[in-house]
Image (cartoon, rainbow over all chains, first blue to last red; front, side, top):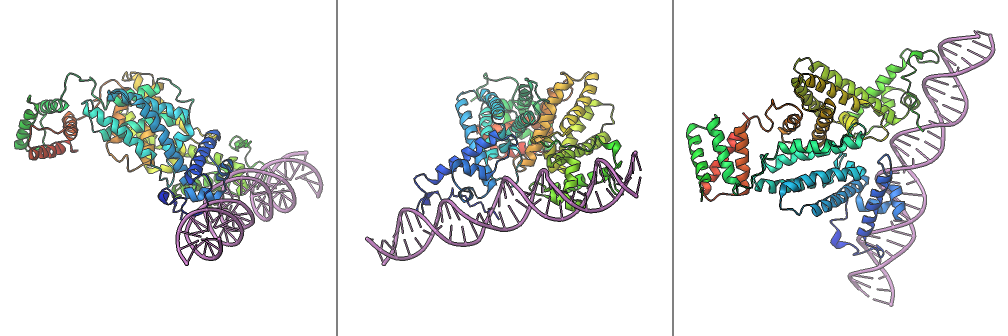
Length: 253
Length: 253
DNA sequence: TTCCCACTTGTATCGGCGATAGCTCCTTCT
DNA sequence: AGAAGGAGCTATCGCCGATACAAGTGGGAA
């Protein structure tokens, strides 16, 4: 049931037949999404009725169900539209060539977005049954991209993938807790403190602009670690050759 | 509206008048809560119908509405009952005289509870309109009590109140993210890493902040650096084998 | 130009939901 | 015994999500 026959894939065939009127499907689509966002922000219980949405736009229910499949499809579309807003905001921020500064700005902007759009935020990050929305994953990818730039600068101590999985849930947790229980988490320094705690576990404490070659730095650190604490996961011969290679990588060009 | 005239305060007057039958009100109350929990765990969409709950217990709808006021009151009661389970679990753990160990156990048990009871967990920690449930606050108090013991032991660098506000949202964020998007946050070390990152910002640096195994950390960073910027100081075959070895070093013991 | 047909849209409706009005019955107090 | 008041059941209200059905519309074929 609910094949959610979205008309996005039939976009090239749009208006081929039938009467869609002077305004195309995607115009009605956008209007429905916008109306849903508005009613979602107004409704204190965070719930909307497809009837009310259709009435505000001036279309009947079958139109909505043709465009979005079912109510869940509508909410997915709203969540993805919210991601577009989120990404647009973030794009206006990330112009620096300092990826760490962008990371900080990204966290702060995430918190601001959540505070300004609590209903949309819940729609995006709260577990919803049978949701096919891609907003969550795309935001994680966005974060991972910034972290990859950090890794390229040599300031990341883990993989960008793991770092993103560390940062985003913490960010979401603080934002959702503040939405759910504003009175319990009203400490103004809370987001910053959480941010610093997580970032400290992911970024190297000291910026290393002095070292232009992060590969060499990593190799050097790996060698020293091996010298201090030997590993038993490699055979001695392997460890010896590994050390030789690391030494070669560390050698000046 | 919906005064939610709960009969808990009328407990001393129970069965004073009227026919409650051989089973008292609180028996029916508990049965309704239990049935709701069961149906909540079964339902894939996390939604329940008061009709179905009443039918399973064998009472009619007005009974439910007299006992809980409305559907939200029922869900609040379920959330508070879930808190009792949560607190009971935690009470079985916290017997140590090492408050820091209790703190770690508390985090881990929180994650386990969320994984075992995803529906209940969402009910407790996800923003719900007009919720009068006290579970959220009581769990925060529980955490703050443990942190006060840590402060008495002199291992806390902030106030217990702020520390609790730092820890709980991070804990919730990881748990909810794993419930909402299991595929995106499947890294098994994610909860522990988050825990260590947050605790490091709250406890005196007894525990290693970033990584318990510096050799593994160095190997991981070396690998990510190699993945980002390949080196020309090693032959491709050598680089491939180097990566394999680093991977072996990074593997959990 | 005319007919046809695929597609859209409005009407009306279905089944289910949360919530409640009003009658009946039972228990308890006087 | 009679009075009184609370509790439960039946029936129902209004709203919701979703859809069957028929009328309508416009582009393409003859």
